[in-house]
Length: 177
DNA sequence: GGCACGATGTGA
DNA sequence: CACATCGTGCCG
Image (cartoon, rainbow, N blue to C red; front, side, top):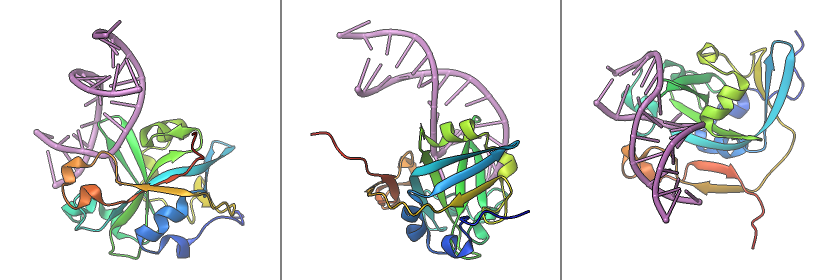
């Protein structure tokens, strides 16, 4: 099949997660369900970086679940949380550098569990590659939104210094005065 | 608005 | 047993 011209490829994802994560804000997630193609701008992401990061699943080392994080950038890491919600992540960096970006928000759907439910993303996406999948990929529309940086959400268990790393990136909207 | 709580399945 | 969450019910 013909791949879309604007699809983002490996050179984008095979960089450190702290470079890729903010660059994903404003990019467009494209998903094909049945024959319908939908597009959503990415509005919030979070970086998880390496075995030393206590909040990163790779902190537990290489396991059945974390295996895909040790692959090269562009692979899709999906896992189930609280028995109910699928979390969508993009692997970044080079092979054997376990990193990933959690997609926390897209235009119209704030919340990592809400967006996967809306887009019907589940465990069957585990291990697919954004650079080659025929149902999920990322496009660049040359939007460069302002970005707000804060600490990661829902990882208090990780403790210092990981709990306070400024690794959450979200689109910055104009403030009311 | 904010806080407490429980749903619910899986990996280590 | 904890978990990168979310919806509901209650408060007042």
